[in-house]
Length: 433
Image (tube, rainbow, N blue to C red; front, side, top):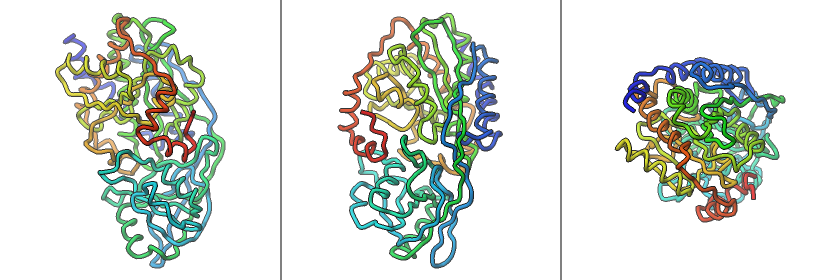
């Protein structure tokens, strides 16, 4: 065992690929940069020993950023459009709904410009996704939506709107920094403001990257990440590090291929940031009974301790425990559902799936979805250390002696209801049952 661990702690393969991805620049879904990143990832997987590395294309609704503005009485405030916002210019009374909890929208919002924060209070029992806040504003009759960051540093947040059935949103939407949001709330609440978004919405193409390791079995452990990133930043933590991790894992697993009883199928998805489109496309094409487990890397490498959402699957919880005990190393776990990354397109139908991320001590995105998501926030040590743990986890899952039971979709739906996610997913058009 010591040889492969030592090689992983001295490997530059994953970190070099991370540098390659962030240096591309814009990796927005459907862009040339996303395509370049996918091709580079395909080539990197082949270079470390994965077989049949290739791309699988699919059509998406494209979105290309133009200019945007928020005009208030004192002048123009800095903002960025939220991807898949429609173009338009609208004016209305600014209504600050605070954190944007469901009850915060129980007021007259007809024709208003609604502003909601990007976080929830510490006492609230679940994360409220940006799109849930957006569509609660839409349901209330709002004319525009302003998404206010809660992280200091003059960083306007991004993140898509739109639904599976209507990819372009209903009303113009922009992100503003915490500081701009505070100024708007202080000076302009109850006063008219104007939101303007210019953008283009052409048809586009994205692609998933596929490769295989281990024996040629029908059943497979899916090892996944997403290649795309928001166009305003390098996308280092979200999710260049996840795809770099998958490339590093492909290297370690190729060296341990003889230990794999089950095929490990690598899929690095496209178009995650605009609605989990690449994973949705793959999940529709794949026989769910043949998926042993999904090991989705989204947010790994951002902080030192690895965190695993196990989504109520006892077998996934137990597998993490085996690896943590084997290495006498902490891995944070939570049994709660997390319906906001690529694993969800499988988990919602009862397929066992991890969301592997980092334990940051907060439910917040931190630098994610802002211009500050840059390479300098990460370090090779964390990537290498987590690669050791995830390699062992994948080998354990691919062992013929490891069984992780699937769940019934009805059980997932019941858990969503118990954890108070059901209403929000219905509001955003993501309720699948």
